[in-house]
Image (tube, rainbow, N blue to C red; front, side):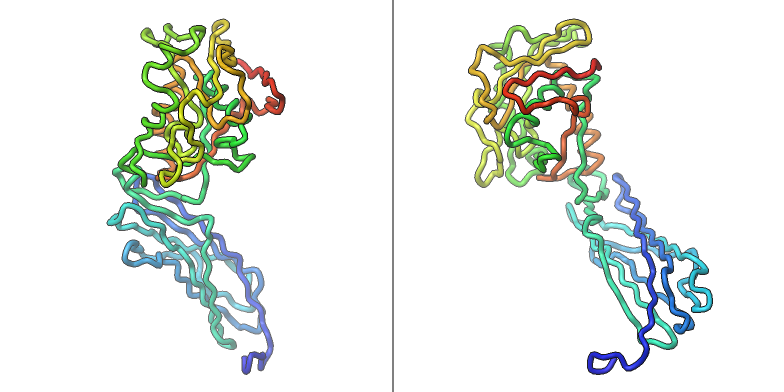
Length: 353
């Protein structure tokens, strides 16, 4: 090029490049692979050689192992589609900081005997990697731009799932709904969130200690055959461990749906009609819902309530995705996908678990 204009013939050489990263949720070392496939190489190039730099570009926080290549990084103009080149490299986050987003941008420079070198660099924003030792004492990494979906266990805790579905579907803030683009935002333990708010303090706003026994609907059914000491308890949605909780203060604390008391929520209760069949009812002792509320409160079996989240979420879901303060996630209830929540009175029958 001279004065911005080509002084010779324009030749084309292009490749399709695939990037794969395999993370470990329990290790700060992970593997990256690049797959380079020739698409077009003009024979007049004679040959084209690529130099591929896909090291972690943050040497102060990330180290790189040796590159290995299956297939040469040179293609001849006489045989441009002779092979694919696959490169593999390990990266290790040094885990000196609590959390870090890593730069895995790749730079590829092409050389030919008959042309000036040409370089390109890219990074997939959607595949950004965050490593941390906050969500777990063991360092590990995750694709933090991915928003995971928590599916409640309907077969095990049908009334808790019915309650969450009703509140998500019917209320205007649609907490946790992917269709409405209203994710829940995770609130971890007080020592791990920016505000220092204990999620249990959110629960106590909506479900004060002893409220279910003193004021809850007496028709709520315990499951003493599963848990001998089971009794009525208070279930809230959105969950207490989210910024969406009605008990989370607004303002600088970050709460999105602050209410003064659980009395401001939609009031329901769960009762078992017969073995394997549960009903979620409006608590007619209270004023009928306006469906403009921002939270739900339901009286149900304590075992059902605690089991619906419990270890499956804290030790499974949130740990698997290494969720940190304010990370978004969706909540889904596939058994209720056929239900219509658009009418003033909501009636729906889900399949028996």
